[in-house]
Structures are given as structure tokens and as C-alpha cells.
Length: 118
Image 1 (cartoon, rainbow, N blue to C red):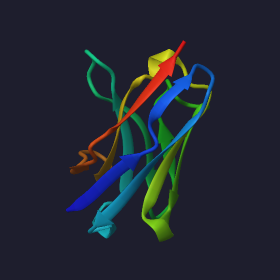
Image 2 (cartoon, rainbow, N blue to C red):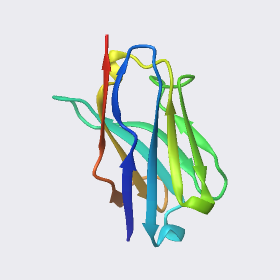
Image 3 (cartoon, rainbow, N blue to C red):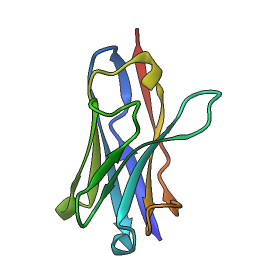
């Protein structure tokens, strides 16, 4: 099992930037895939981005491609989501999640609120 703690959310104006962090602890070696998801009020949770610990390979949802960047610091057991050119529609609770195979995500953080004002 892996414990995940997100931080870095907040209130920002449209066009601004935020960087989310996700600190992982526990059996992180069993979870190569780290995903970022978000859920806006009244909407289903959606995939945002993914990065792997070993290879550093990334994958993004079309809605954030070119604006968001996932990265990781293996020494700190932390993954990041740099969010630039934020839009009001990016407002959501952002979750970090861990997966062993990149399909189902077995471990989830508590989420961090991101609010983008117009």
C-alpha cells in the first residue's frame, strides 16, 4: 500500500500558474505509475496526467496538453503537476493516485482544491 499526500492547491486568477505536489510513502516501488485526476462539482472524476517513476514517461489529457507538465523527484518520492495558463474550467479537486500497471489506480490521496477565478 502507498500513502499519498497532495499539496499546493489554492486560488489563482485565470492565466496564472500553480504547482501541485504529491508525496508518496510506503511501498512505492510497487507503483510505477503516478496519475493526476480531478473532479469538478457535479462532474465525474477525470484523468489529467500520468508519469512513471522509473522512466519518467508522461501522458496527458487533451484538455491540459501544452499547459500542464508532470514531473517527479525520485529522491524525494514526490511527483509534481505544474499547471500554467489556468482556466476557470480547470477548477476542481485534484487527486494524486498510484498504480502498479497504469490501468486501475490502487491508492489515492485526499485531494487538493484548485480554484481559478475569471
